[in-house]
Image (cartoon, rainbow, N blue to C red; front, side, top):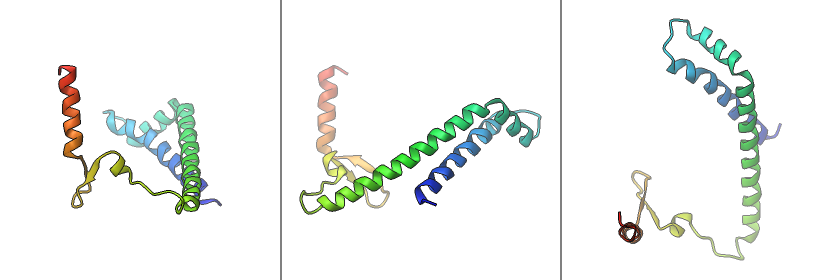
Length: 119
């Protein structure tokens, strides 16, 4: 079986489980947990199945698109220079925490925009 299909089915299953259990965990009732899960699934069966199908299709398509882009990139790697997305967006990465923060020049541009709008 294709790995992408397996990952998509796993994502759909996780979506289905979370769609039935999270409402039961949030709601405070006197009934047992499994009874609540069964009731939620019976009530929202069509919505949960449709949502899980959409999630599976989206995951599968995303994995296929990434695979295609990576294959095209490997052919064009020698033709064009590679740019890092953080360089294009003026983001710097703090290596210890992994958090991205905006460079001082980008902050200066944001503050000018805020001042020009009168905020």
